[in-house]
Length: 158
Image (tube, rainbow, N blue to C red; front, side, top):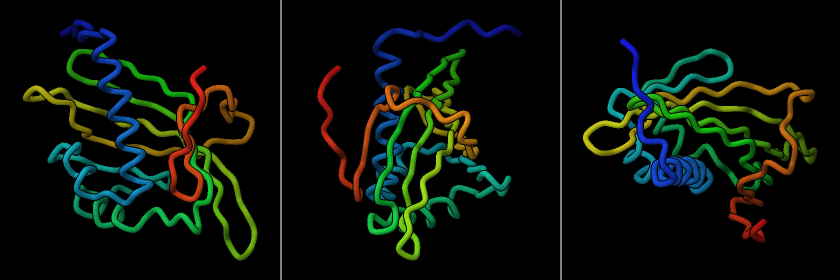
């Protein structure tokens, strides 16, 4: 059966962009309650190692995963959203600088968050993270948001 494209209106795309921003903000602020509200009951997380976490394990991790003294820089870049039927793929790359043993280590991961439109709302049913090799790092001109030591930086409009 072929799915018709769901409404790819500016309103739908803005709603999904806002969910992506909320997802990241929830992570940076360790906001479990806000994050729990956007997850589907059947949610699963797939880590770069291939390990799978159920919803409960993931939310327990979420409560303490971001430490602004360790993760001193975090950005979201290269956002790409595709809507097909009642499914949306929300993809972006995160650049992260972590301070470890007095050294700063920078790397990038890309993620695909899969949302299902159900009962009038988008709910995330899967989040999958993949490491990005340096030769595939998206450019700085694709940055959507920046956090320094856990604080959202206000950016001038382009």
